[in-house]
Length: 440
Image (cartoon, rainbow, N blue to C red; front, side, top):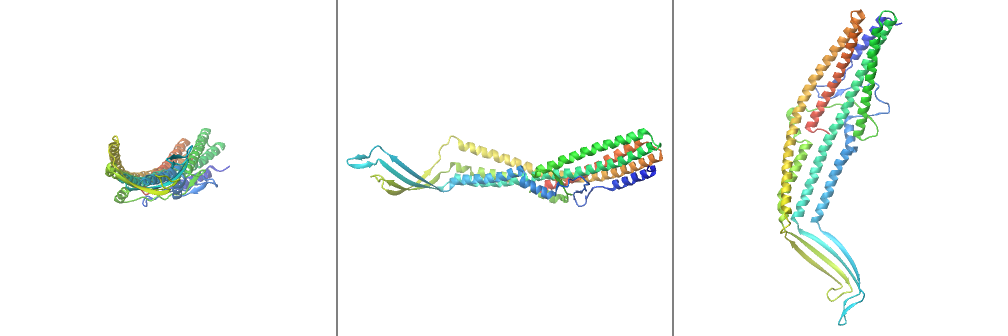
């Protein structure tokens, strides 16, 4: 049987080692946390970096694919609209069979078998409305591209949050495992004391109850880790869970620079593109009232020829069309364009204010998160010292293991609070990157 003093020596040594293992966030450089995972990764599970995760998600996830297809759709609409302002060519063939030849005074007027072929070339010469619609479709492509960039930014932030959630969860798993190992040694010591006739049964039962609670907590944290890994795999667009590497997040440290960058954020750029498109559409209201000119050229082949239609020939035509009345369609379109422009202006102002607000909020979050992290670390250090003192007093017989168990729970909660605070610091820096538009 191991001597009680040796058991306590092992416990104190383990506590000293475990309390020194902390994930560090480099607040001065604005970097992300460094967390080392111990035996929580399957050998077959793929480990991925933050940049790779974002890049993979933007290339494979359905949300990103839809954003890319919207740009292609806008380009296709442009091709459809501009066709109205470009020349068109069509060919026609016709065959007519009559019951008999038509004659008049011995002259063939209409043969019973008639064949006609012609080609019609239509050339829009002056088409203000079609030209304006062509230009508006080009604006729509710019809007679609800007909207795609904003979708990519929003989605990249979501992937980064899922990534950091795994980092934080791995730290919580480590905390739970350290607490479980410490309580296991405590239980072994209490059991040996009771078996040796020194301790009592209630101390042993309390220690074992605490150990079993730790085992439940470890399993729950592992389940949460599995869920987070699977969620990241779905976002990245792969079949199966993904593990993460230690992230390094560097955020802007100058608030004025961040404010300038926020004015070029993707949602602000998209809002500006919509305003430009709306103003352009309103400026071109006059094209709904303008006349337009088209030219047609039609060569033909006729068999058999008649007195009115030779065997071959051509004809050309210039057509001027003046829109006089359309039932009020033009007035309704003008009002609709004006309303869309007003909506775009309001959205742009809101996006600009929101971007600047996000920057100010993110800087305040970073400051508060760093302060909270520092306090959490100090609290964890004090909790570790309290646990050591409780163990020492218990060993000396001046306290019961109730105080030891309470101290161990407090230490575990304090270390968990450190993990949460570290995650808060990383999330705050991620918010600052998102606010300035540096993601993806």
